[in-house]
Amino acid sequence: MLVSAGRTRRPWRGLVESPATETRPSHDPECYLCPGNQRAGGAKNPDYAGTFGFDNDFAALDAQPGCDDHESTTGLLVSRPEPGICRVLCFSPRHDLTLAEMDHAGVLAVIDLWTEEYRNLGNNPAINHVQIFENKGELMGCSNPHPHGQVWAQRSIPDLPARELQKTAEYFERNRRPLLGDYLQHELQAESRLVCHNDEFVALVPFWAVWPFEILVLPRKQVGSLQEFSESQRDGLADIVRQVTVRYDNLFQTSFPYSSGIHQNPTDGAEHHGFTFHMHFFPPLLRSATVRKFMVGYEMLAGPQRDISPESAAQLLRSQHNTHFRQV
Image (cartoon, rainbow, N blue to C red):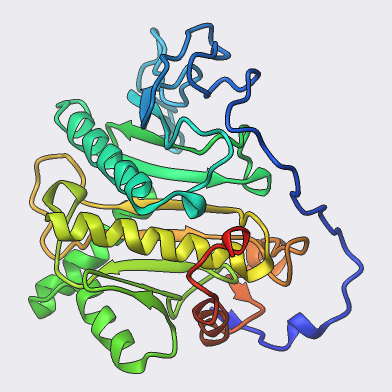
């Protein structure tokens, strides 16, 4: 990771996005995720009053009939179908809320929905990996501002989780301790990259962070998946998700865009010793509500580079108030 801590002082004459300032209604009759509305695929949403999950009308994982394994005569090119299930998860019936603006009970309901989806999809023998994630904001390609996330559940274990599984297994084999558990102890002693914490979880800017204000959420006690959570851990994760997202919004006084997701045990029935549940937040904003970090040039051709040190990013986030700026 190349850290170029002075680059935020360079003159900026590049693209400046307009900050999102619109005030959204609590129910939008044109929104295909609001209760009672018709979706883009033609189905009608129920008048749901809490969380709501449904099969994605335009699923990314949908192996078509006639799609078979194929290998070129040289063996250089290989393709195979990837069956799976894609779900959309509405966090709230309210069109105008985000996780940062929900109360604790609302976020806890989202944690319960994630757990239910992981359990139900993971019980399908054709599903070996369940990826829960959220793309928030237009900058992250979100097509609808209604608070929602997605689940992609599939036969294969994707590349990035597979790499994490491999490295944590190798570390556990050598040390008989979980890698992320040892890493958390190091960060708790150093303190400089911590953002916020409670009795169950710690949010920090990881030493290897790529995005300017990237955050890693880790449990204090070893746990492999949402399905293994205690009541206290459910409460703790809901609290830490609120703390992280509120700090994001407060940093630049805007509805902060990000991609977030959960990495947890695959559902392939195998033992994954040493793997630890964790949550990633990857936000693009760098200097303000209108200037973001682009992954171009050196980052695409050579390796990751960041313009602010992890310690500075953590300090800025740590200094933000726990009350959302719109509620002060």
